[in-house]
Length: 328
Ligand SMILES: [Zn+2]
Image 1 (cartoon, rainbow, N blue to C red):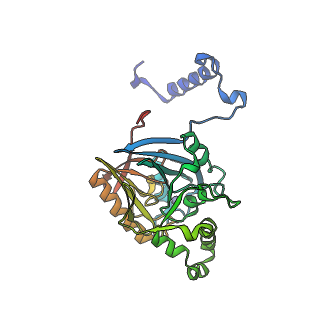
Image 2: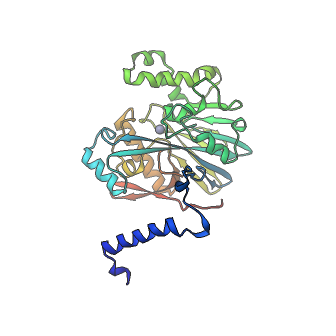
Image 3: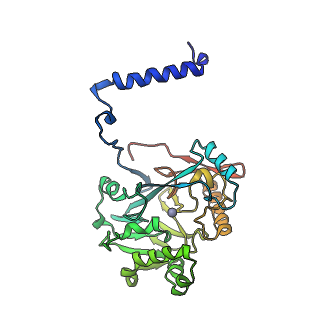
């Protein structure tokens, strides 16, 4: 039988035969883990790559699921479902994954964002396990840099009980983000739906407020890392251009949420974008730039390891993942 002879029935029969083989005839005497009631143990969620002399380690912090309905503000649900189907994803709910970056440059260890800590969805919170599995220790972190102040990016900095997770790190924040969230007048005037976000920012940063280093966009904030203003998602939302030798990477932060929706459709706006039109303009500009420059990109909310390149495709773009490599 050639491949061309395959009908649905022979495929199904084949699948049945495979299933039988997998339970009865496993190679190397390995029994399936679920048969023993053992948890399925994935590989640690970290992935290392180089940008010139700089070593970047993507560290996964799990995911949160949310209904698709209401997620894109300015598109019909039917169109959003279609975009999910075109990416072979479920069309009723979205798994939003979290990927922070650890950056080793000049003998120092910096973090870009910190994940959910113990404040996120039950399917998140794996960050510390993955960070340690990558060979890091929180006390060795010299700088923690924040892209913006949403809870999924900052809560890993401080546990719910108040413990500071990175005792020796300087804290670096976008000045525009600090100005917005730490403004008491804005906090008290905020709609009820946003009051929790303001309180969360104060919970995380309050104890270190006087030591926080604010940076301006356009400045090189650490060797090889330049802050770039990317407002819209939040007022001070920042992306980071990393350059070393011929290597260049744009850390896109939350310029897009899931790429299947917002890289494909840059004019769509996620419910988390505080200024939808401004976020869309920023998104298009950045996607245009990284695709023209052929820069590698890293996203916070793309499928792990959340890095690749951006290709133009019609009126939108496509994320082309990097080829996974076992060595750097
Ligand atoms: Zn986010």
